[in-house]
Amino acid sequence: MFLIYSYAEDALILSIFVLLFYGGCTVAVAKNATFPALLVFGDSIVDTGTNNYIPTIIKCDFEPYGRDFQGGKPTGRFSNGKVPSDIAGEIYGIKELLPPYLDPYLQLEDLLTGVSFASGGARYDPLTAKVVSVLSLTDQLQLFMEYKEKIKLALGEEQIAAFISKAVFFICVGSADIVNTYYATMLRSFEYDIDSYTNLTVSYGAQFFQELYRLGARRVLVLGVPMLGCIPIQRTLGGGARRVCADKQNHAALLFNSKLSSQIASIKNNLPEFKIVYFDTYYPFLYILQNAEKLGFEVANRGCCGAGNIEVSILCTRLHDLETCKDASKFVFWDSYHPTEKTYRILTNMVLNEHPQELL
Ligand SMILES: *[C@@H]1O[C@H](CO)[C@@H](O)[C@H](O)[C@H]1NC(C)=O
Ligand SMILES: *[C@@H]1O[C@H](CO)[C@@H](O)[C@H](O)[C@H]1NC(C)=O
Image 1 (cartoon, protein in one colour):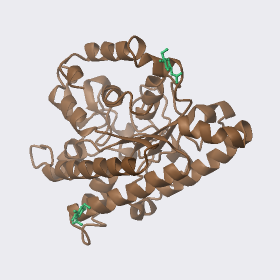
Image 2: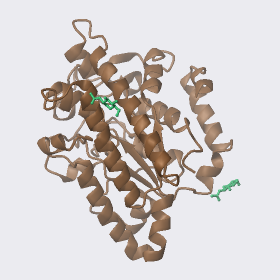
Image 3: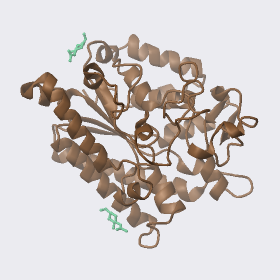
Image 4: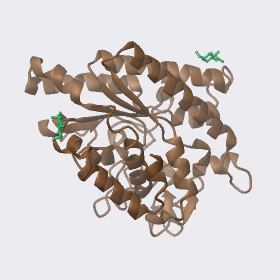
């Protein structure tokens, strides 16, 4: 990890990853297809279009979302291009794009190489998925059970357990618990301080991971939350006139991550055959913000869409075309909440290189 950190130039970083994945020892992972499938659960960072199929206002299946996706196509991905679920599929050599499970046109082959169950707005805390009517983690698990039934018809009862145990489960959720549920809507902050709220959130996480285990998952990677205080909307809401990073949210993110990682370590201790690994995103994110210029970014404190201070989802539309940036690759953030594809690429590569062997 630190070796990679010391190379500042984007091109260099990317070529190192190419080397690692196509030239070095980890190449074996991708090429002999250790992981037959990638199954993704979580929130808007890894939603590849789920919310297009459910009645919620948390959507982005309109322009300018997807502006750089295969020549310009809004697909329900909360970015200008690909999102980490697609990029992880590429890195693991599984496939280029990870479709949402709810896509009615999926073929058996699509199911057998993996799908995303993630839903923008999802949280660990079940209270609020209901409030914004997106798929909670429990709903996502229910879809996963349905998924298992479908592929069981193809693989047969015997093969299904082996297949599920070899698939990689990629979990990315938690940001909305902190920035939305706790700080923005204050749905929980009357009852809980941030210390007890992060305990509560992590305990829901533990239930979710154990449920995944019960359903057959054996290789699970769980992302922590990034520097939430530095996303544009938090700078706008909590960063004062100069829109500096909001300390409270950054502190909450660190607190949450430390509890999540110890919870995961303790689950792993109790279940030796469960390869569940915590991947930090906070410090890789900090690295990107601190080295934004060297990585080719020009703007790191507001999103490309509109003025970039508050625009996200239905607030980010073509109505703001005049203000929207021309070249998203110069921006760390696409909207006031979500990174650009370029940032996601750097981040996903850094993160997945953190523990390349632990899922094997
Ligand atoms: C993948 O290939 C590498 C190198 O050829 C080998 O060491 C490893 O055991 C293989 N893994 C599997 C699961 O076949
Ligand atoms: C949070 O959990 C930790 C570890 O279980 C415990 O020591 C601490 O007292 C809890 N904090 C609150 C406020 O409940």
